[in-house]
Image 1 (cartoon, one colour):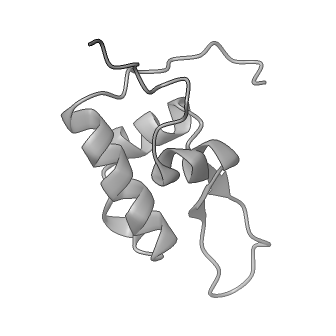
Image 2 (image 1 turned 45 degrees about the vertical axis):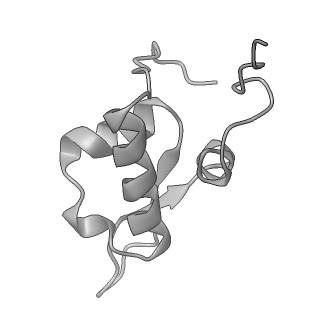
Length: 86
């Protein structure tokens, strides 16, 4: 748990699709083209984290998926699935 207040934004509709697309870019190592606003959505929802490599020539900062991000890519959990009404 973070010492900072949570700024989670709801992830539904287009925002959910954008988050999935951005997480796929991170998995492929192509996160450099994700806008800062969309990176903040991933960080605020604890789907991604900033990777701090040892600073040396040729190293750069990057993004990694969190456990929550991996679950988000896998699909809805049983808590998120609404029961069908007959």
